[in-house]
Length: 82
Image (cartoon, rainbow, N blue to C red; front, top):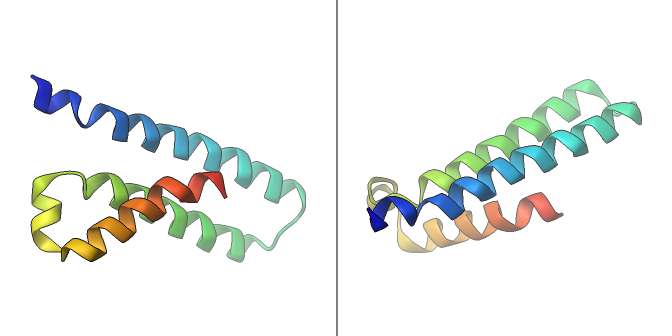
């Protein structure tokens, strides 16, 4: 049971990151940022958030080297606040 609870904070950060990303996209759309640039940035941000969450699981950690896992997880946590 406690093993499942361990991933709950990561899920909360993922949902929070998506919420912040949506607000930032709305603000940028109002400023009339180029649609292609906005789409690519949103896609990159979404991939980083999801990859950071998936790397919390043991199967994800087994695929990538330890340094890559930690860098991506740190970037996924810091990215919504930038």
